[in-house]
Length: 223
Image (cartoon, rainbow, N blue to C red):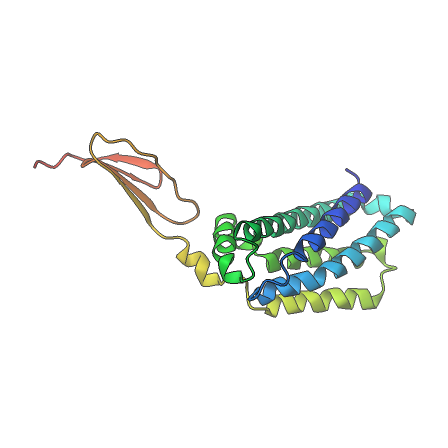
């Protein structure tokens, strides 16, 4: 895809995210990080619109098309992730009888992000999108972007960096719990391999231990 097509696609994703966010924004207890993200969706939309118009009318965009394309692809990927998270949260909200309290959804969101990684916290995704757009607006191809627009992006990035995280850093450490599974000698069972830096030990009867994917054969202990 060319930069213009990527911009148009990302703009459509952000518009969809704005629509989905409106369905969850009134949930009581919604983390401040979500509110900051929601407030910045319009800023992202306006900035992408400016980028789109510049790409449509510019004659010098081709010179930097590859550099621009790389930034835009990264923004699109982050926007898709953000939109997916919003959609899943809304689906969970509906499943919980249109939950009005964040407490009914919080565990679902936490589990989802712990699995995906801290880069998928909504505020981090938005911050990455804004940083990418800031870089674009400061590119010579988009030098027509007003200083006010750049300052708005910088202010939004600063606020997101200071907002209370939707999931604390310590939660990611606690999420690396050691997992232990025991299967009786001669028994059957599923093996679930942990991800990240967590360690996993599967005890298969009295003589087999699987740790971090390596099978160590021990000597059976006499009864």
